[in-house]
Amino acid sequence: MPPELTRIVFAAIVATLAVAAPAAAADGDLVKRGENLYGQYCVACHGMNGAGVLQPKPIGAARGRAQGEQNGLGPSLRGVGAEAAHFYLSTGYMPLPHIGVQPRRSKVFLRPGQISALIAYVDSLGSGPPIPTPHPERGDISLGQKTFTDRCAGCHQVVAEGGYVTGAIPPPLEDATPRQIAEAVRIGPNVMPRFSRKSLTAHELDSIIAYVQYAKHPDDRGGWALGHLGPVPEGLVTWFLAAVVLVFTCMTIGKRFGHE
Image (tube, rainbow, N blue to C red; front, side):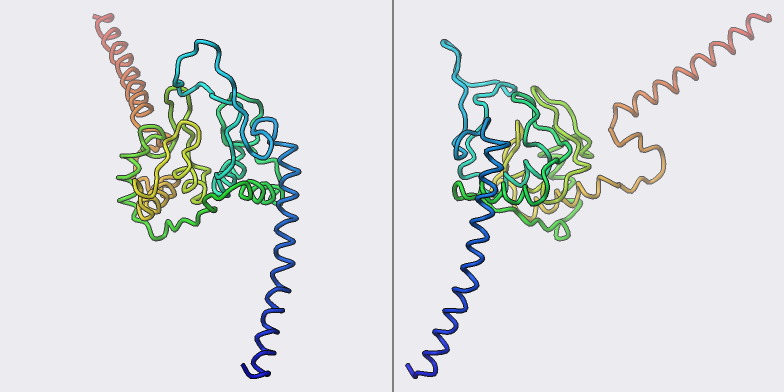
């Protein structure tokens, strides 16, 4: 190799190492900060080094568990990756106010820098999926509505306003971001089933997200929206109006026959 070319290659290697070293140091500092925050907010439930904390079953307890029964104080976080950490922290699902309650969307009291550090630490515990980047603009709203109705409406209701199931309350999706929806579909929080890329393709997921985004502000073509809660409020309003009409009719007939 000519001396001039050798010097150029050597300079390129030195420059690469000079850039990579501070970046690696910065990543290490972020993970270290996340470890400190983990010890403050997470270790009581998820154990040292994210190993999880199991809750021993009583002697003679049957195998298996109901939807509302915990098999541990906190599951292992090894291998869940940045995807799960971002979902639970960005939605306020974690940290829990106390053990045993269903994770629910709440005010996020951790600062963005703290969340980034915790995500980096959890991601360092084992190889896991990264934070996804969905593309709802590539989805099809019609396909999304059909897929959401088939896969999700049984719990979240057809216009994503939430519902009730055994042992849990599926939340409304009005505050969910496209990224959080994609994360929830892949990780299956609480009693929600997990949908793999084989059972739900990327295009189907993008279409579901596009439909949910549309359902937040649907195009109501006349009539009353009634909170978009489906047949229950519609039926109640119908019965209320019918009752008023029935009472008015009875009063009219009564007055008429009363004067005769």
